[in-house]
Image 1 (cartoon, one colour):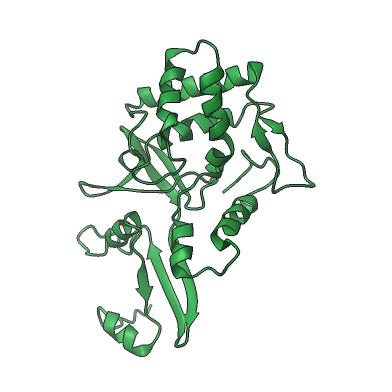
Image 2 (cartoon, rainbow, N blue to C red):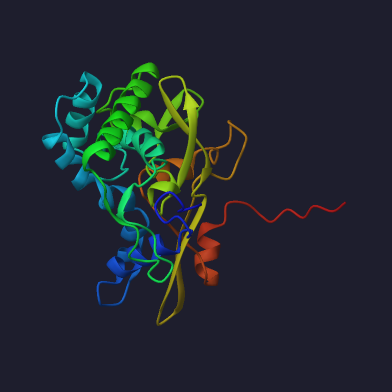
Length: 263
């Protein structure tokens, strides 16, 4: 989960630090706040760059049609990778190209200040032209894949349980998204290959540990099992499962007697 495209000499610690500061907000973090933090699906790359990209779209000279279309699609994007976020697929394709450009930042990475650098996207002159060219290339990529520029992210990134398509939120770690999903191309979209899998939030009350969790890929590989995609749907709906800890809660959630398997 490299953060090198934003932080050239770092990994994901700066992302976590930014998000943890926002989540704490000067106070304690409870279950509800932690759950919202884990699945906020905010992109730090977008937070750091989209403002300058939108400015560039308005001040650049004559742009190719593809870049004009890209600017229009990004103008209404919420900078998130929620299932209903429109424009996320385009930014994903754009950043994969733009992040490789030399001299991308006005303030380059400084090992003495790794959290606050790099910053300020460089949009003047030829550097701005290259960013718009990267946007035009991203538009062409989505056109070739038959993906609408403003398609809801959940219609682009999906997993399949039989004939059922399940919209999956989250996105690439290289975009600074805590809820990481790395996807590969499928016809008319993307499907995750690795990323967020087992997620658990643990706190304590007067009776002991309180834990909520989701296993995003579900428990059973058997399509006939009721547990083949149940937690995948729960993940898609951001619906957490309260794990039993005390004996009465364990008994209430028991689905079958234990089965011992010996060699």
